[in-house]
Length: 154
Ligand SMILES: Nc1ncnc2c1ncn2[C@@H]1O[C@H](COP(=O)(O)OP(=O)(O)O)[C@@H](O)[C@H]1O
Ligand SMILES: [Mg+2]
Image 1 (cartoon, rainbow, N blue to C red):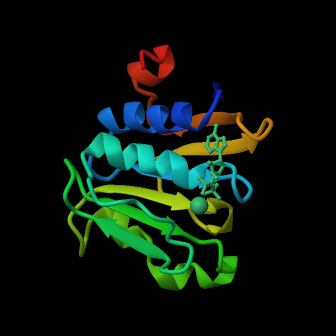
Image 2: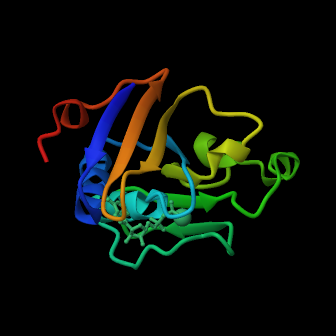
């Protein structure tokens, strides 16, 4: 597990951009943390790093937003409005297995609500410092953190 201090919103966005450079099709990022912790902001950085030009907006009400104009498709999900027992019906694995969709990056907010996880994923936990600062804990599960993240040449 790696702990990263995010001094302000632009640090969070930049970290997302850096993270995006090393992502491959099929990679899953599971985001946890309270409302306003910065999950969507990080995904906006990832989208920017993938070269997505459409504005990335919170999928809280739409459940999933898909962006296809970047280096890889981005599937951005938010489980906030669901209970754990409603999640299996979404067949989330179709996204990370790329079975009926073009393989891409899967970013899931409120991953706490997932009753099952993929074999391999990056776990990202965001928490508050004060109004401007956030802490991020990033843990790779059955994968490795890219050199860029470890050394944070941002
Ligand atoms: N260091 C920071 N990183 C990310 N967001 C920050 C930071 N500091 C302040 N904020 C603010 O916190 C809020 C984060 O919102 P958002 O990314 O939508 O959170 P979540 O998706 O976790 O609910 C935004 O209003 C943003 O401006
Ligand atoms: Mg959000």
